[in-house]
Image (tube, rainbow, N blue to C red; front, side, top):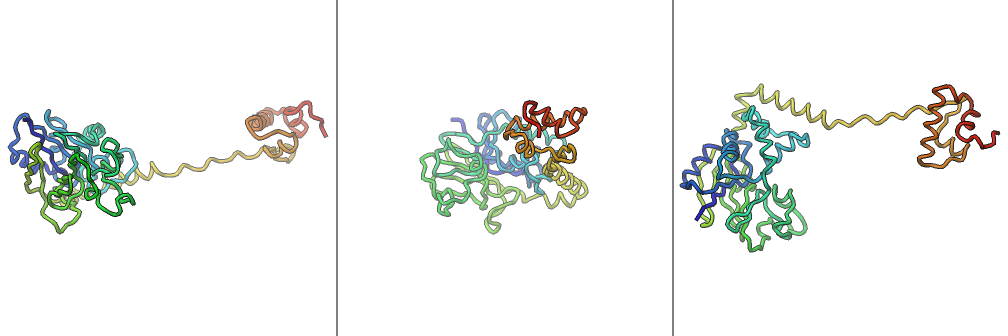
Length: 311
């Protein structure tokens, strides 16, 4: 029977990934599935992403960290230091990687298990989960009464997810959390070492190997000028994209014989009504003032209301 090796958040820890596959004794037809967060924090995001892009028996779900890079590219979000580090480490490969991130699914089904990155809302069917929930888990809400979503989950379908690292495999009800802290970033820094974990289906066997902590502090020390320059570039780019457009300037009112010809004046003096006709009348006055046809208030009445009595 073909096996599915479901791997928790890798976060750029390529050596740990390949060590884990060896520990799982991966067979040629075994499928490797990432729950997302391939990048950020670890020292070699390029090798991780290339593996999932190029291996014919590997695939990945979109994680919130891949989504952050897409949002940074779209100028929706300023990058954190982890995203700056990943771009520096990836170099010329970065744009290609982002194009691939944009193609990744939010969830997968394997061997009767539902796989996503962030989690599910227990009150909704699995095929109706919002994008934000699949990426980051359900927000705290009255529906959960402050509970974590996994403690409220009572579904018959097992859910495998990453995103929330507590330093060990987290099994609650019919849910399996397999982010065990590769690259650092544990929710609780006091629990467990940084590790990378796989859950092998269909037997539900867990395999865990050591993984490095965050590489970002070292990168900032070693490539400080590049790191700072890229950070400043992003800040300037973001500010430029989000600066408010100047308020449109109102055209100065037309003056005829010292009288401002406005919409209100035309309504009062000529009985015009609000709407498109009033706007057209103002444009007509402007045009004829410019070409010299209108010089006096009488000219205004003659052009706009030739049948109206002139007082």
